[in-house]
Image 1 (cartoon, helix red, strand yellow):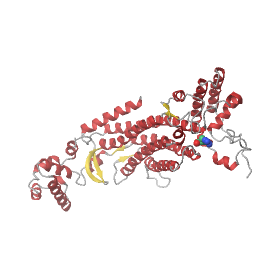
Image 2 (cartoon, rainbow, N blue to C red):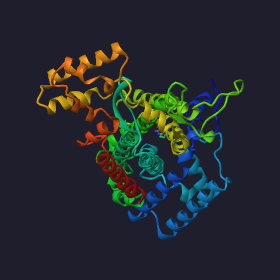
Image 3 (cartoon, rainbow, N blue to C red):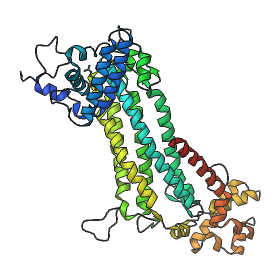
Image 4 (spheres, helix red, strand yellow):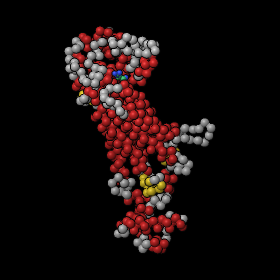
Length: 469
Ligand code: ARG
């Protein structure tokens, strides 16, 4: 096939007799998705020309002209007067064309010295993701804040706590809501730790083996707000674990939203009737006039699948790639961009849904003791009377069985029937047969008792306040 795609090989035309075939140019092109890195590319170029200048490759008038030209180019990008052409392969080639259009071929052509698109893209993806990390962090912090607020409003509301999705022990609604805030706090911690690894600059790695021009990589890193240069030029251009780790953290955030979503969807059913979603955060049905659907929660659940797909796609791209740069690495961008976009659109809606849903407190409290959820309290009360836990478990099991056979709740069993099961089951056991007593008694570290919940709220408030700075 001799269909040539014009000057698509502008960055590397010298040894070629013509541009690539149109089909190859179409396959190669990444401009339609990496255009979002344009301002990062310009920042990278700005840092790079400083290094060229300090190493003596650009005079003062030259660097001044280049700086002005880059500023102009940025304005043109922002006002839409400079756009990508179909013949631009990627954002780097498009912006080099743009710079040459403004600064002239002679001066513009000097800028590529000492860098390759390989170290360039490895740096830009980091600076871009660092900004997105800040943005997503704010969105997650808002959700943590809303969960903490909602917990504080519901300190005294009891609800059934579950294991295996069966009634297990009563907990406070506040404790349950905070149990969804803590995983998000760990995701924020992960983002913080990721930042330390991401904040390094591959500039200077060149194509793979480093640069001969003596450009100062510390200067470039500093200009880009990064903490220093990477240590191995091959690793710097070949690795994308920084991208994969970022995608993992985002996926974990999505999975955490999805787990809560599953509960929200169930809580909103007529059978549970634990919550009502606000009209603004639910949708109707085109045919069934009575319907009110928890679409936000369903989309959160669905989109977490998409995030997992992006992450696994990215990992599959990295698997078995030999050192150092391979074009496969271009495939890192679409998944991670989609992950950023997905969370950016999901989190505000999710937070709004949590902020506005109303809790049917009476219903939750009514069901808190159901399913003999105070049985552990009876067993532990027996332990306090010096019965071994093994016997206490057995005695309480018989009590539950008696209740089931006779259609009674634990507190409805007459004294003499209790005594028949075990002489240790004295009427004093009734002290622990209340939901509020049970919750109050669980005052060990991290428990559902009020003082422990208040401690959690204050820790999370500190985290939100720190994050907001
Ligand atoms: N668009 C490419 C990427 O995203 C930029 C680097 C291209 N390098 C190369 N040697 N062809 O990975």
